[in-house]
Picture 1 (cartoon, helix red, strand yellow):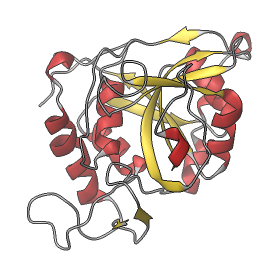
Picture 2 (tube, rainbow, N blue to C red):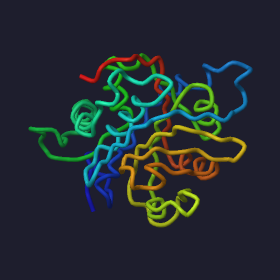
Picture 3 (cartoon, rainbow, N blue to C red):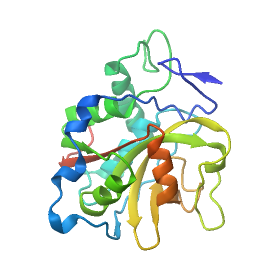
Length: 241
C-alpha cells in the first residue's frame, strides 16, 4: 500500500490521482458553451497517436494531460517530441509544487510523496500557455455532450481491480476491489453504441493498442463516485518547453 500526499492510499503507484474539489468549478460548466443545436451527443473521435507509459511510476495526471495536448483537434507543435519524462517533470512535478498538500516527488521535495490533483495539473498546463480555459462536465450526460461538441476530456476516476484487464471486446468494468484513482483521456464517444474510448498511459501493450472502451452506464457510475471530468479549451500550438 502506498500513501499519497493527502494521506489517501493506493495499491498501485501508477494510480496516484488525488481528488480535489473546488465548488467554484460549478461556475464553469462545459454545457454552458453549447448551443441549442448541440443538445444531443454525436459520434466523435479525436486522434492521439502518442503512447506514453508510466512504467511503475506515478504521474498519471502528467501523462493524461500530455496525452490531451497530443490530441486533435489542436495538437501542440512538436507533439511528437512529448515524452513521459516531459510529462513527469513539466506537468506532474510542477503540479505537486502548487497543490495544497506538502511534499512531492520532485528533486528536493520534503517530505517525499507521490500524487497530485487534476486541478493542479490543469493550472500548470494553463500557466504554460497551452490552454486559456477549461470547463467541467458534471455527470455522464454533460461529458457526452462535451466530448461530442467541444473536444477530448481528461477524467479522474476510481480504479477497480477488474479495470486492469479489458475483456475480449476491450471493455473495462468498474468491479472488484478499489485500488486507487486514475487520470485518463476520453478521446471518443459513440452514442449509438453506448460507449466511450479511453486512452491510457500504460503503453501500447495494454488493452487494444493502449486504449479501451467503457460503457456510458459504467462511466456514469464512476463520475457519480466523486469523479471529475474536464475539457481543456482554447488550446494553442506551442513547442514543448
